[in-house]
Image (spheres, rainbow, N blue to C red):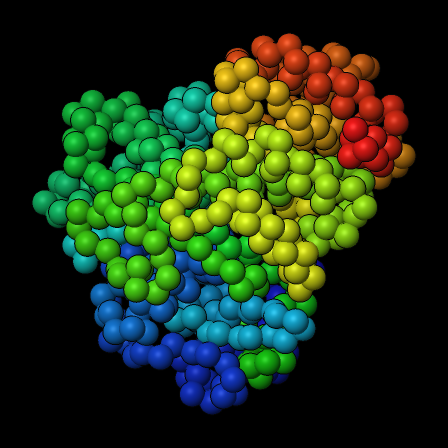
Length: 505
Ligand code: CS2
């Protein structure tokens, strides 16, 4: 059984989680403290992974529990009908597991009122997105869902899915295509626009969302593009909660704790943070009353989180896959890796983070170490290694570019980049293999294999991929030399010896 598939917990005789069984759940299990039948949908959420159910779904559940009745969520899966198949028989209820010191705290979340899939419900999805009571469209489709060029943040007009959507714009499959078609139909029906809230790990995610949506619309119809630019708000947000993929172990824990089966629970760490730019012309839930920070400027929050958390995650991920280390918690038990990320923060990252309200960024990095050490969270390094072509930029190459522009040295990012390059070979040279998951995987792994003869050649070929590496980074002699040196060491001496030498230097 794959970790991502619907679980065996639903195959047995236990009844299924549903409205009907809520009242009879064990007293320790938290559940919706409100009448779900009295709640109307106000949000359409696009992208139904574990993350949004562990984050947006929970904050919104809190808002509903505090008495709001018009901010339920309709979730839409743009990839497959699997989550719909898991959640619909459960009345869209699911369980959040916070595992703290070996004790599971279970909470049944009720904020999703319906779950749909564009694969076979596109017209229904568009109709819901046009309902006047839907005033916010939230998004978690991961970085690659924006169909942008990571180095510029602009719509990748050569993207095959974008080309396909432009050829059949009324039956879109991409995020930009879907949002544009919904806005077009809503406008034609004279319905006040919704606000588009990106919750993905991108620098200035609202700006990226606005760019890809506006540009896609312009390519369809310049007048529609101009109208979107003038009428749709795209606030930025910083979201944070570590939410690994659900395994059968969590399904079994839920079955044990609830006495009923949940096909797709979500496991997350206790920590959560959400900073949101307060720009919602058509209203929004009072998320600030349940712990979110509503602010005029999200940039400091997102810069801190993307560079400190996600940047160190990617660093740990590539080095760990090379070293055969499976989880972030295991990486934190390694003799060298914690020192590598401490050096990353201290030498390359912290100084690039602007002052963050009420936050000490150094203390934030120490808190990250504790979060990573949480042994209850099995966050797989191979999961985090996915989509490096989209992730390296906002997490690590942008701060590197800033340091280079200021004439400063970049100490650790070249090691991460070298580890990512060695990772693209999908093989440790000693018989252990893995698979690269990335929208650019074919091109990148072919380039890597074709240039595996020398570190110089391999680094040169990959640094030349301009969709990933900004010219000021790829063209910087010191950065390039450092990448080549680390890559040479990884390929000839191996990851262990490279790490030992790196932390000793
Ligand atoms: C991770 C993130 O998979 C990844 O790339 O770095 O999903 C990370 O766990 C979240 O952003 C934490 O908020």
